[in-house]
Length: 150
Image 1: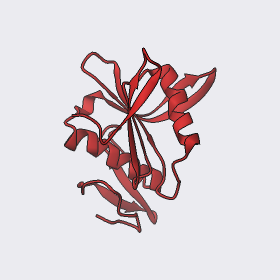
Image 2: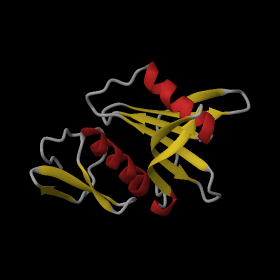
Image 3: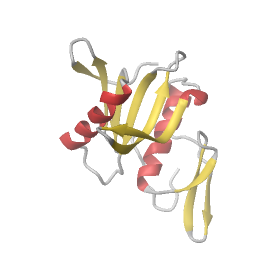
Image 4: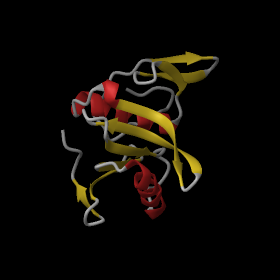
């Protein structure tokens, strides 16, 4: 569904709650349970939320969106985390606007966050291109995947 010139992304089609208020587009975030201004990055983030819930069968109760963490004594905000049933970080997602090219700097950003969070899987996306990695902390390496596991 396209709304207010939001770009069609490389995700399945999802049903979003959208509205316009004071000539600004809004989207309802099912995790934070509130209306948010619909920016290109938020469009990507909400697609990721729906991907995890609808396609990967991840419980919404185990997903957090835009929370603050401390990395090297600096406050940072991650886009999305999915926890496993043991409340360990399972998936860390970094979202960019479709206009932003994913570069080494993007990978460095999520890697820096993951030093603190210790996520088993990483996803980096601008809505058009998606990259998935599985971490191996013992070998201090990662493997690229075709998609996130269920």
